Length: 89
Image (cartoon, rainbow, N blue to C red; front, side, top):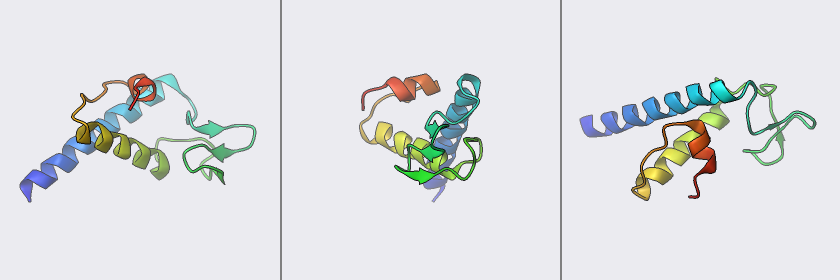
């Protein structure tokens, strides 16, 4: 039980660090299309947050999936949002 809690805490720390890094580079969600108001992560649904990604559950779940991908493939975790975007997984 403790081990699972520790793993979740590590995951949330990484997600929060990447969110903070993304805020440094982007004022609006990088997966938000301003013209059509669509979210690229949900593939064709309207973004109900107007591009604000700090509290977006879709963006957070995307980062959590990325974390799981890195861990499952035993790859080192990126330290910056640009590394997440540019890494070929």
